[in-house]
Image 1 (cartoon, rainbow, N blue to C red):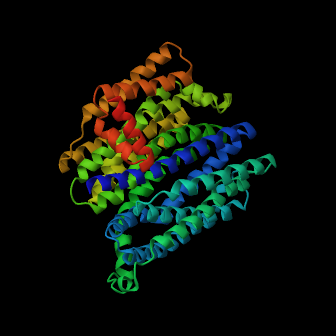
Image 2: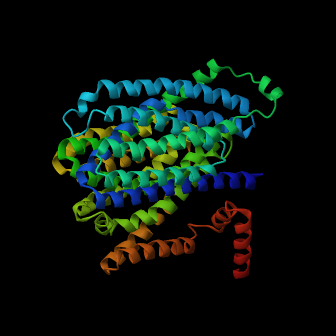
Image 3: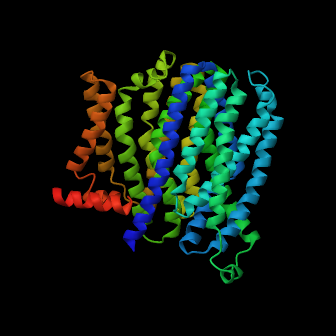
Length: 496
């Protein structure tokens, strides 16, 4: 039974990871094309729209996705679709109120855009983006809670293809930031929401009329449960989103759209690397909420695997940041130092995120809030202090300091809950690729070769030092489709 649960959990994480990888690759391809077709000023303006709508989406969702997963994870595990349906209905009702509040902010705060190149139609587009993005986020959490996430990468591939093709066509026609926001943000959000809604309806179908009639949970109770759990997570989520996105807006205000584009691209590279941990933490939350034993062990495994996936890549990129930024064009090369600083924030962010996920699954909202607060408040404050002085590097330094403070708070929390973290393993996972990447840089190896060599040699040494264990390889094989996993198992047995 344990093996089956691990297999279901692993496959769920793999599909979410594929979804995030598709987002990362499509985003990288999009920005790579856009930097060649249009100016950094337009990219900077679009990045402000993205950052602003992300913050307002965090306001609209009222912390519902995590709160809903906490309840649905248990209901889907116990095969109670009627209870799940009540909670989903209640969450949509609360979400509607959140969307109205965020939309009113856009409508009445439109004067904030008067001094920029944004046109008057942007307010309507932003409201539609907030509504569609919020709905998509909530419906995604329903699918994730079921652990049946196979459809998510397919939906992402479709929506990513549509947004890239449509955006390229509109840019070539000479359209501005409002139309680009429509094609890049609104259209794919609407498409994803429609497809996710169809899947959600199928997931919530009752097993029988008898089972549906036996439902004892009322809409009022579900609304109260979701609102309490949502608000407990809402403020930390909002603070985290502000801490993450506000740097882009502050740079736009102090340094202009060109520097904003550079910082936004460096932040997106780091975000793409962090998607590995995001996929594991996302699937782990409903799993952690549905089990009583071994929560700490599962939380540690998500942290360890997040580090194994993200750190070798990020450590190798630190020494080739200039080459990475040059791919976007010479105007973006001066963002290499900012990228290096942001890459250093990945390990503390992974650890803090894993601990925050664990304490939230226990219902320890205060501890979860403390971690998010320690990460985001210093970032927000330092943006206004360091960006006017150091520009995009100031934004990156602010971001890194927030991650380190969240790590410090997380260490205090795990000492209280008596969770074991193998710091030696994490140190080795960080030191090995950093040393190899530095050697490749000193030897002036081509950046593509240097990155590949760093990653491959790192994993070989991690196997040699038993940081990656044979059981880890078995788990990886088990999450693959049966036909593929059987072939690999037979091949490994012949080697052994």
